[in-house]
Length: 380
Ligand code: SF4
Image (cartoon, rainbow, N blue to C red; front, top):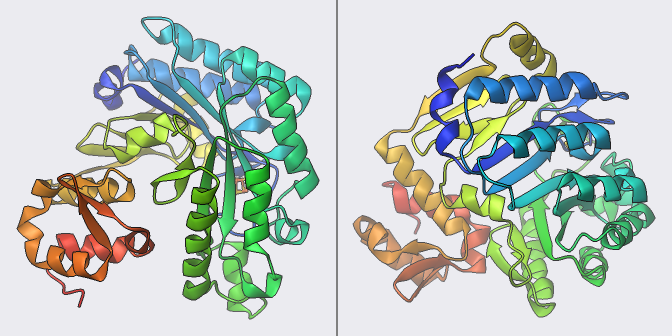
């Protein structure tokens, strides 16, 4: 059976699979997840297979990203079946990047070996902090010792491409030492780091704590200080920020995420997964049960779509371009020359080799900066 989505899949080379299951909800998280003690692995793999069948024949793939949720909670045999199915659909043997998001508590020697055998060649590990009090506050399952052990286990299993996630700008009352967390992460010699500033999303435990005065709202000042410190420490340790939130050693950029930031088409499968063909963005039903039912009944799991206007495409192109260290070709911003001068003067942007790039100060204010470049409002 083919549905409307089939127009997207054959021409894209980046595949995202959303695996929504988590052991519990972290205090700051508003992602589309399904809290399950037992992961319905067989049902999940069957649903993804059916959705991919619905999408029609696959073209060549460059990257595969297993995100969540907590993909590492999918039993290793189910993950193997899933990836084998995806590989078998590609017209030639798959040799690209396969990223698995994993939580430290799921990293055992057996799992790590099975993930390698299944074809995973990059792991993005949700470490978040190396301070046990902060991890407990975040409702994470693991502690710092487990995170360090997970890195050692993954290296021993042969993973040469390892990324760590860290969350910064947590409330001051936690007395978290951000510099120490950065140093601990650097000491583990990851190939890549992703840094996320804590944001308060509605309907999260954190939002409720703040509403009743049990936690302080994150401060902008702390956010800026810690973001700048991360740049300083990671740059000194040999990591280059190639995107506003991501730093890598030479040759270790995320190819999958880089495809998003360069506006390339991608297909997503699974609950809440998004697909994009350069002009039309579609997204699936976000609740696991609703998604599973739609697939089981032979209906499209697509919840909705938006067709980007030329203006929206332009805005998106600028936003994505300025997120990256490559920036934008200067000529493509010509119509905003008035604001451009002001932004260069503020030191938020620099002009280099015919390209316009964000400085660290500019990345700190990316939303305001893009609004200034794409809208009529003044920034002065
Ligand atoms: S493990 Fe990740 S996806 Fe799951 S609740 Fe925590 S932050 Fe959200």
